[in-house]
Image 1: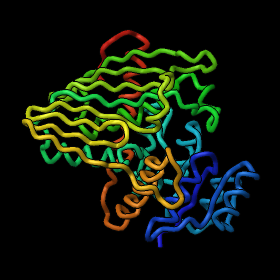
Image 2: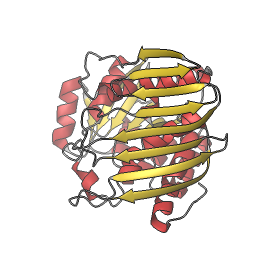
Image 3: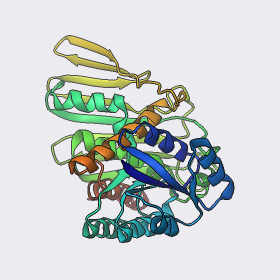
Image 4: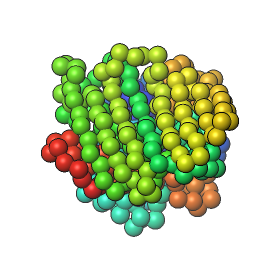
Length: 336
């Protein structure tokens, strides 16, 4: 049994606890949070007796194999470094570092320790996204040459995560990183990009709209667009995808409808994610992806595989985030 220690008992961590409960061969045996009320509530809800208010002490005293880091961004580097020093595998929330320099240092430390680092980049694990990836890899539209990956909503994300309103970098760092990662998974690495951003909501510090144009090494041009200022709540939290290829087109439409048109032949599939017993609409697609990514992490540890969203792989996604901010700031076209 793989023994897991969860660090951070906030808004999103409940999904991780539920996902670990569903993961065969793994069990959360210790939890940590500096807030005593959150720590007590999580421990009582999931029956976790080992509770810590200090992560370093938990890593020293609890018998663990893995730490699941579900904390805010500034704590990620010291916590993953501590995991490496303690000889523990780690799965860390995205973005897993504040800078690329930090990210490279984290990856190097885990590799020196011979431990596995997976980034909780869960959007590409949503079953509708997996269906699109499978169709593309099977040649459903031939060779793709254009793609659009879009997430637009007016959903109030700040009510559950108020700190998001105070960060000078918002939508690209918090949401766009997922959408950029989907684009990488679909179309491969990026050679150049240009980005524009806007802040529509005057009550927040960062940008809440971003549009990013990318040239991929394989010849695909893609557009990633994200918005939390769009007066459209019915699609939240769905990612919509369009792909044009030499043999046809593919659309992941609202309502999890996958449409493939190929030489006059139209296929329409319902790729709705399952509603897990502990999940709730409309979050169920993200909640399912949390369970899937954690199950794959357990399989990687058992089989000696490198995770699809490993720390080293995620360096390329994080580089896109940094390049997008640089492009938006300078009005330039940049190489990640």
